[in-house]
Length: 169
Image 1 (cartoon, rainbow, N blue to C red):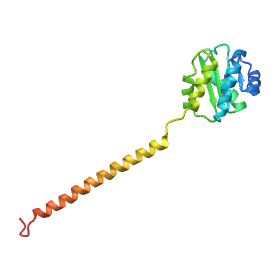
Image 2: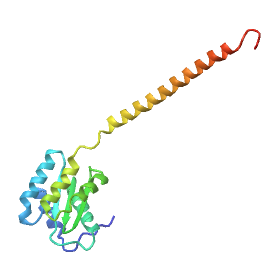
Image 3: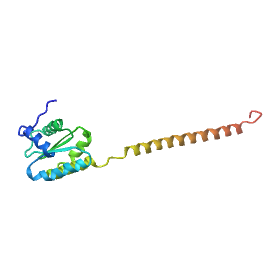
Image 4: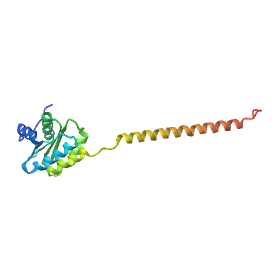
């Protein structure tokens, strides 16, 4: 897979910066973003965040940059640019990442990263309970249908016997 990182990004410097504290961003955002990275760690998520000062020519370049950082450091990577977001993860599914991306368009890097992380750590639907509930409903419906059919069959047998007399009339 050929990745196309924005030409204005020094990939080696970005990788070195991310390796240092999990964040490669302008100075004013670093402390807030380090807090987001620490909070992610509390939830077992190895998060790295890269913030760009300039927009990339193509949105896909942010995802390519996230993939390049993730290929080196692993974990989950969030890249935020002006009006753009890209992600990569070796442990979180693409649907969840994209749901997080949808919440990361705020114009404020720290708020965007917080919103992204909130989506990743919020509990999902209790699929096991939902599945068990549906199975029980299906079993109850099938059991009820069987019971009704048995009653109809039995009452039909009794009615048929009563209708037949010994002389065949």
